Image (cartoon, rainbow, N blue to C red; front, side, top):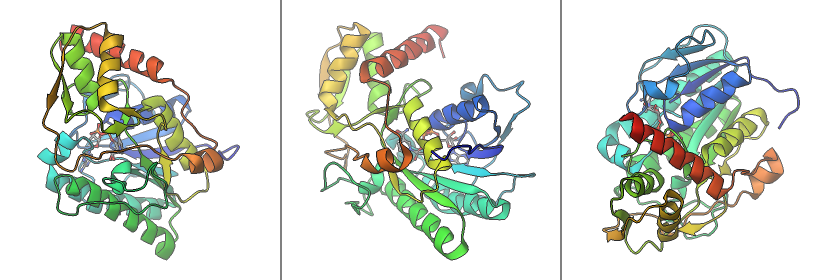
Length: 320
Ligand code: NAD
């Protein structure tokens, strides 16, 4: 990270979502003023619970797929707005493509007008069902352009190309980060991703539904680590793309067993149909992030999962 780099005023698109709201919190903790631009398509005001009386935080409720401006100076634009869970982008395919295409264009235009650094939150999904393992940034991916995940994967691939064009042709100071699966408090219980699904099922004593035979692998990163990586990339001079994820890989079945044990649950594990184009392997090579950003995850698997389980337990008690 560049010593002495500090953000005075940041725009976070998608700041009412899971990752974005933690990012807003961290930026506020570090003294930056934050403008969150979000239409609450998949985000929630509950995620911004600590913010109503915070003079340094503004929620601008709008769709980033329509051109927008933010009055006043901005030195960092962090573009996260997009449905991100497979359930959400299946329900909102056109919105997902628009957020990746028009939303990224509008956020880049904002950064250009303000002379701000721009960060694109891209995804490991640009690697598709990867033929190279672990995934390294130089791998171009194996994506089905008309498959059930294409609206998300191709939106992000286009967003990366657009970000690259604004950097090379227009001189905008950009960086692309490719986030791998992130988990933690504020995920929605029914967003369809493995961690919240397994935790809510285990806590309720319901069967834990593992897709396929559960041999497919994932690498999951605690949200605080992801946020640290995003801010390290923003503070660096690097253009990316740079992988941000936890290189510890485990099978989905092992994840289900582990969650069940940490929840102290007796839920049976049942096997359900695996969705189309579900990646078989997922593990980031984070050598670049280590070398260029001095970043690596620090929150251990048990600690992160325990904090997440505690949060979901409180959520269940609150009846939300
Ligand atoms: P999320 O659904 O919780 O948050 C996305 C936010 O974007 C929501 O608040 C939503 O309301 C907002 N949004 C969506 N479309 C919008 C639009 N057109 N205009 C304004 N706001 C809009 O998802 P998340 O898990 O927090 O993901 C955030 C970003 O990180 C996404 O860009 C996603 O692709 C990326 N990412 C996340 C993960 C992960 O594991 N969580 C992994 C890879 C990449």
